[in-house]
Image (cartoon, rainbow, N blue to C red; front, side, top):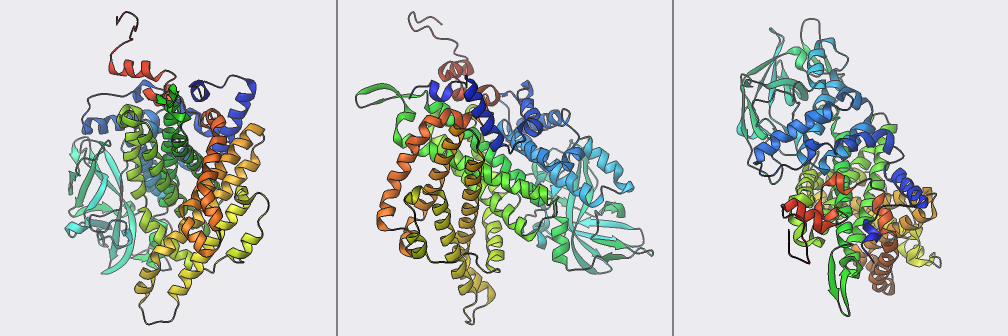
Length: 625
């Protein structure tokens, strides 16, 4: 394989058509209308690398870049009306500055989104809405507390209602209740936050509600607000802080009540009908689109990592027995590493597109089924793309360590995304418990399904989906049986003994749904070259997943010993069929060396790296520079 196979641009009309077809599938038919202008912003010099910055300086640069993005697209309130634009905004900036992504998503989705959703039609909140919509102030979102992590429903920050003055007094009662990780470290940056606090009125605890609270202005922190920066994090210089409130009084209007309660004529507070749990979920409603935004950033980083690694692998020369100067991508071992990750990137893209479509179609009303889908999408995409970034970085050797080649930064990004908007392990466990509360779908045994196999065997995508479904059903039934076996265990003891298999069950459902989305994309491809390339990638994804749990499938009779032994060779052979499609498959990502500014992604990575280091051109014949 030569370097032009991956690195060369598409030239023929047929190549252009195939590239457009892949872009249509990858971006769900919305690239030009939804993504293109946001992508174009990244070409501006404001996103060029700045060497020698301290982490705080890098953090302040991210605020500057966020203002740049804000000033060149529609206002945040307009973006919130079009979730597809919000999802696109999550996908692109992290490719060049992971902190800019974080700032934009917290401001647009979590903070302003909460104000707009629960108070956007209120005249008395127009000043706050305009201040946030114009980015006159940045909007942190203060939910997580030092002592409670993901258990936001148990948070301790208090907002006590003073009926006489029609105000709330917000207070941090103890060290465990300090707000943790939200952006309060740069104290001269004007900020208006959404703060989640426990509303107490007339001596009664009504649960968690969102409040608008001014944290700082250009002169520093506001009265009663105390904040210190968190320790430094690799790569990301954002001003994460530890924040506490000391008798901070806010007006009654600062409560983002929505339809979660009301005030009577005599000034008494009355919560809406229903339990605190339902009101809490409504207060936290922006977490759902936030999880899709997190998934978008993860998938974007995965695509960029594979793009960079494959372009580099097509140029990076090595020796082989009987051959010199051979691109490292010629090695089957390199193909196996990178093509399985390429398959995952495509798979996660199609899963995410499916979840985004469902969210948009339900117009923000998240059903129980969609809630499960979003949770599975967030956990699977961020876990899988964490592995993708790590593998791609390793396959690039020492070049993968440099921030200029992006993957080190993407690794830091993914570490945060796995935790953001609900820690994956906790989120998947909660989702698995919800799934076990319902009967399992599907019928038949593994042996019966094996007997139904056609001549294509393990090369049949429909059959592979059925095998995944059998694992999901079996683990589901096993989990329900453990939970209801009639012994004298407490509920926690029963759930604790079931949890790990339940997590496996939930992940398997996510994989099965993903393969279904992938198979649909193959069927939707009109161009023969695109359909062939996607079919091989889908097959590679499915076979890799079967190999992951091959022992289980063998023990259950879903695979024979011969089939398990054959899996490595089938995967290897599939990689050889992916190889001719490599340039096309990464061309559909709409990435470029100019956009990513990664030297090893350039058409001539040696010259690009020379230029980056300031070494200048090299004249081999004379030694002149």
